Image (cartoon, rainbow, N blue to C red):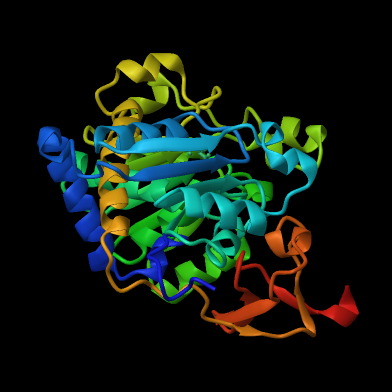
Length: 363
Ligand code: NCD
C-alpha cells in the first residue's frame, strides 16, 4: 500500500486549510507570471485516466502539465483500453502509475480515486468520483472567488440545481464551511437536496444554512450564486430526470434582482440552466472560472510532486460485518477493497464514499 508514501488529493479536507491556501496563492502567482514555470515539470509525465466524459477537467490538467514543461499520457475512452477486457481499477492504476509521475482519475463510482491511491506508485488526484467529490473543481472555485471577490469568508453562497448528485457542490460546501462566517442557501427541489452527510457536516460546522425551493426568493441576498447542471447520467430513470430538468433557469430578468457584485459561478458544462444572454453580464464569471482552473491545476501538480509529508490516505477501521449502502460506491464493484468505515457526525460511514454503513445481515 502506498498510503504513507505519496501526496494524493482525494478530498481537500484531508489537508489543513493552509495547504489549500498555499495551492491557491501559487495558482494566483502562476496566473500572474506563467513564464516562470515553463520548465518546472520538465521530464515529468502525467497520466489521465478518464472513465467518464470531461472537457475542462481533463484538458485543463493536460494543458497545465504541458505548460509546466511535462508530458501527458492516458485515455478518455476506457473502452479503448484494457478496461474493455475487464481489467479492474487496481491493476490499471498499479501499472499506469509506474509509467507516470502523477495520475489523474475520473470515474462514475464514488470512492474510486481513493481505491486507486491504495495501489498507485505515484500521487493520485481525484478528478471526480461519481456523485461524491470533485476537489480540483473546488480549488478552481476558490481561486476564482479569491481573484474576483478578494475573499473566501463572510460570503452568502447560494447553490442551485442538482445538489444531490452534483459532486462539485459537495466539495465546495465542505471547503467553504472551513472559512469564517460563510452561510449557505441550498436552492433545489426536494428530490435534489444535498445528501444527508452534507447536511450533517453543515450542522456540525456551525455555519448558517437553509434550504430554499425558489431561486427568485434567494437571489437578492447572495454574494455568490453557484449554478449547476441537472446530472442526467446519475438518475435512476429518464422520467426522474425529465421531472427535474427545467426547474431552474438563471435569466437576465432574475439578474436584475441580484446584488451588483454577485459572482455567478458554474463548473460547466451548462445545459440550459443559465440563459445565454447572462454571459454578457459582468457578474457571470464561469468562463473565467474555467480558465483559473488550469492555473490552479498547475499549482496542484507542482505541490503534489514536491515530496512533502503526505496526508494519511485511510483513517478508518475494517469491519467485515458492515457494508456501504451506496450501490454506486466502488466497494460494490471492486470486491477486493477493504470494507473500511469512519465515524462522522455520530454515524458510521463508508471510508470511500461517506454514505451510511449497514450490517451485512440487513442487505
Ligand atoms: C462538473 C463535473 O464533472 O462534475 N464539470 C467539471 O468538472 N467542470 C460538473 C458537471 O458535469 O455538471
